[in-house]
Image (cartoon, rainbow, N blue to C red):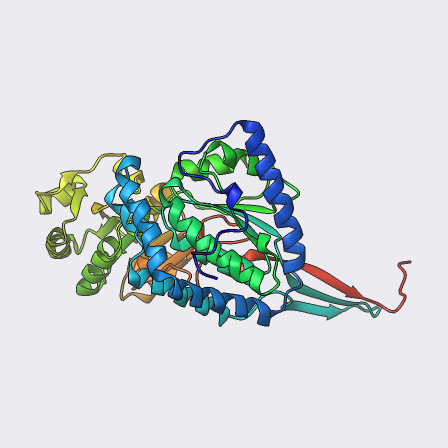
Length: 440
């Protein structure tokens, strides 16, 4: 089906400015959550072939309806000034032909990944003859809350359905028309294959008050995953009655060690900061060993300035780069998501690790070094979801890690850490088989 076909639940459609009273929100949350719970039971039994067929059908539908999707996206872009979006936020919102093709290719990529549901993790046979097997199972129902990026609608749906989970999507008001159009394609493709349409639902109101009602639905919603600004994530963590998979900030560092290949360090710093500054794995702070600061800082400073990056440096940095703005205490704890970089000269590797421990967010931390011992010490001492050696922070991404699309990057330590792909959207259960054994 294409976008010209009216949605089955058109009477539920909302506009970005629509609001309801709390009883409406509670009823909506109850309705969608119950439907999702039932759909999750059906989806858990769906074959890998059927789920993959849905994914490939969705990819074909995105390509066939690219012009209509772009038209709906233009409606969102036209409204962006009214929402006060930054340049980085508008960039995340935009669906170019290349990004729509990427959405379709991402759906196909997930179809080509192994299905985690039913995977045997391990097993054993007890002395009494009982056989134990631990197998992967879906989490159940995911409530996924996100901002700005409409491509995430397809990514999240793909990962959830492939891993046997129903998902309730709640996108931001700035992407309302894009999300609604994408969701309709995904839901239509489910229905065409006899899969439950409620396996992928979109909250049909952008009223923020509705989110709180969904966060109360413990027992029907199994996990909440927020993907967006720190304020959103803090709210979800505070209000959710169910577990939350999240990261608050992406305050990522690159440390240029005394033995670093300085040309490599320049390239990795520029890539980490400039390639896409408005994302969580972009660099926010550069740490430089004092032994190479005099040589390295003029090189990296020139390269960054040429790319329009504003530098904010410590006193030792500004002695070498006098055009840098003075860094404040707040700068070391700021996720800029813009062409701004804090720079600090440190005494040694230990001082760099101490700075990361004090100011990092547990997301992505990079060392550039030729010293194997220094690299191993960084790997062991730095507490982060991804610790990188001689490569860009921008590689901390589900697709780059071979996980396909990701539903987010977690800086938690329980259940899931780093890019959350298919396996991270599963739990496990024990299958116990016996022949009448009783416990004495």
